[in-house]
Structures are given as structure tokens and as C-alpha cells.
Length: 144
Length: 144
DNA sequence: GTGGCTGCAAACATTTTGCATAACT
DNA sequence: AGTTATGCAAAATGTTTGCAGCCAC
Image 1 (cartoon, rainbow over the protein chains, first blue to last red):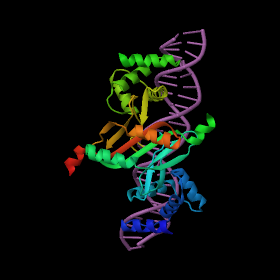
Image 2 (image 1 turned 180 degrees about the vertical axis):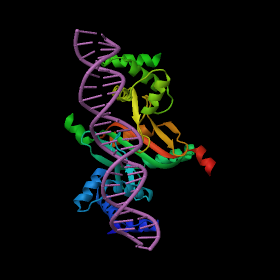
Image 3 (image 1 turned 30 degrees about the vertical axis):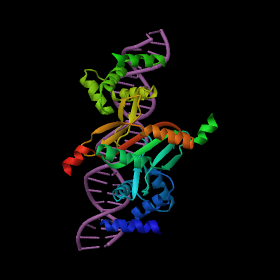
Image 4 (image 1 turned 120 degrees about the horizontal axis):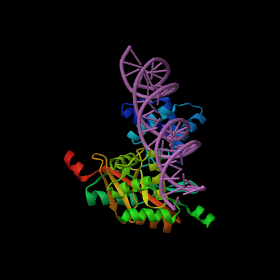
């Protein structure tokens, strides 16, 4: 239970409480391989036998983001936000508009952006949100 | 009236009509230097003496996007969408969280992303949405 | 004249908030 | 016990849609 420990310790270290809803949300987030909407998290929590109110999920996620445990991403336009456990490595998202698949791309691009803005323009970068939409190789091949 | 002509011709070429609301929205979009929310566009249209319903603005913008006349961007999280006239050059947005200023950065980064994904992974890129948040040089200096 | 477009109002989806109660420490 | 966090419900926000009438073609 590595992830569970990380949650408990991080929460306590900042004066927050380790509660059942927070643990339930975290368990889903840490066990998921994909980017989940809040609705999907709610459903996964329900399927795990627990029940957490949507509002509490929102509050838990906001707290996790503040503690750098989770990260919010907006893949499409006004679509619902997606959440994932915070990864130490910088990455960006590649979304296929046909099959809806979301890929992580870890590379030097994000780091390049940091450098470019910091050294070149004196801009202190907090966050880089890079979403690429298009057609993945598989869908590209199957249609034409 | 260069922009006005572009609108009329593009609309007609695709079988759409040149209407008063569409022209009003376009005039604002073409004359603005910044990224406007739909609400801001509505206000600007009103200040210009015309009156266009919000729904019509949404519909006009959706059409403009389809015709590659305008481009939608989501700067923050669940904030309202921002609109700007489509520029031929690829650029990305740099947002200062302190003063709220939004900068355009034209550079090779976006083009690099295209190449990287297309040649390296067979992914056909439709769109690159890159938003960088942080503190601009001015705000960085004034606070310390 | 006709079909696309607009305005209005109502629906929708997502996220936030107020408050009484429950639960963690 | 003392608070902090939760659940519930209601509000806020941004965007979409159905439909009757209007306007560009």
C-alpha cells in the first residue's frame, strides 16, 4: 500500500485529515491508468462498494491538486475536467478525435518550453498545459 | 474593409448567408487585439450600437471556427472559452496568473510538435493547444 | 417565396457553495 | 471535545437547443 501511505502522510503533514472519502477517491485515482472525469471517479468509487458525494469528490480533488498529489487537465473544449495522479515527469497529452484515445508523451518538449520562457523572457513558468488533437496512426490507417 | 470582405466571401463560398449578427460579431473579433470571451464579444457588439443574442454569438463563432475564420482557446481550467480571429501563424499562449495578461508567442515550438508526432509516431495533428501559466517578468519583479 | 438564421426561453452539464450533521484526531 | 470534512440541496456558470417568426437570397 504505497499510494495509501503517500496520501496519509501528505495529508497529515499539511494538517489535513485522512478521511474515508478522500481515501476512496485516491484509491481510484492511483489505481487508474487513464484520465478520469469526476463522474467516472464517482462511478468507480461506487463500484468499489463505497459511496462518496460528487461535491466531496470535487473538494478532495481540489485538495489533492493543492498538495501536488493530483493534476487536472482539460482535454477538449468545454468537456469535463480530467484528473490523474501527479507524475513527477513532465508530459503532455495527445488525443485522437476518432477513437478518443489519450496518450501520454514524455519528452523534452515541455522542458524546452520552460527554458525558452524562463531564460528568454523572464517568465516564471508554473504550469504547461499542452494538448494535441488529431488522428492516431491506427485510425489514420483504417479510414484511408 | 478587408476583413468584412473576407467574411462575406468565405460565408458565400460555403453556402452560408451574410447576416447582420454574423457581421457584427466578426467586426468585433477582427478589430480586437486580445482574446475575448463570448460575454466580452456581446458587450462590444452592444457598445457598437448593435444587439445580438448570446445564442447567435455562440452559433456565429461555431460557424467561424468551422470555416477557419476564428479559433477557440481555453486559457484556464473551467473558465469561459476565449475567441480570436484565426491567424495563419502557429502560436501559443502565455498567461500571467498575477496580472492576467495574455501573450502570444510565435515560435518553432508548435511546428516542432507537429513534426515530432507526425514523423515519429504517425499521428496526424489537427490542432495544438498550448497554454503556459506562471508569472510574467513584470509581476515577478514587482513582488520579488 | 423559401429555407436558413435569429431571438427568446428553457434545458443542460459541470462545478461551487451554504449549512446542519457526522467523523477524524 | 473540538473541528474539520461530509452530504444534501440549491445556486452559479457557461453553453446548447427547440421553436416560431424574420430576413437574406
